[in-house]
Image (cartoon, rainbow, N blue to C red; front, side, top):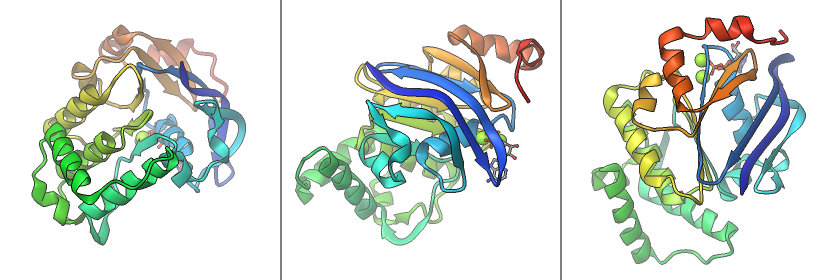
Length: 254
Ligand code: ADP
Ligand code: MG
Ligand code: MG
C-alpha cells in the first residue's frame, strides 16, 4: 500500500528554486530517512509537504493515500493523517496542552467520521499516551510549549504524534541541536508508534539518530533532489565517507 508518492516535485521561495524534482515513494510499514548536507532542501521538503505558505510549489505532484495533498489546506493535511513535527515547535500561551491535544484529537476523529470523544475517555487515553513518552502529567495543564525546554518540547511533539496516530509521520530533526536525551525520546516514540499500518519519514542530519531507529530506506538529498537511495547501510557509509563522494558522482542540475 503506497502511503505517499512524490513525483517531480519542484518548489521555490521568493522566486528562488529550492526543490528541483524530488521523487519518493513511501509504503505502509516503512521508515524512510532523508539525510544530506546542510542547505540541500530537506527542511524545505518537509515544509512543502506540510503546506507552509512561504513555499510555492511550481511543479510535480504529491499523492497521499490516493489524494492530491497539494490542494489541501495545512489543517486538512493534518486531519487526513499527515503529522508534521517541526524543528522549532510553536508556543501557544493561554491554551492548555490538554485542551490543545483534545481539539487536535477530535478534529482528527471528525475527519474519520467519528464523534467527539467523551472527556473521561480522553483522560484515560491521554494517560496511556503519556506512558509512551514518559511525560509528567503536570505538563498537560501548562500552556502549549510555553517555557518548555528543548527536550520537553520534543516529548510533547511525540505525545501529539502518539495521540493522533498519523498514517504518515514526518519528523524534521535537522540542525536543531538535539541532545542525547531528546534524541532517545524521538527514537523511542518513533519505534513505539511505527506499525505495518503507518509510515515514517525521518529527516535528519544525524547518523546518530539512526543508531536508535533502523530505517528501511535511506535517501540522500543534495541541491534540491534525492540523488541516491539505499538501505540502512547507506547511513553508515555516509558517516564514514561524508557526502562529497556522492556529490561528485551525481549528475545534479544546479
Ligand atoms: P536543509 O534543511 O537541508 O538544511 P533547507 O531546506 O533549510 O535545507 O534550505 C535549503 C535552501 O533553501 C537553503 O539555501 C536555504 O537558505 C533556502 N531557504 C529555505 N527556506 C528559505 C526561506 N524561507 N527564505 C529564503 N531561503 C530559504
Ligand atoms: Mg539547515
Ligand atoms: Mg533543515
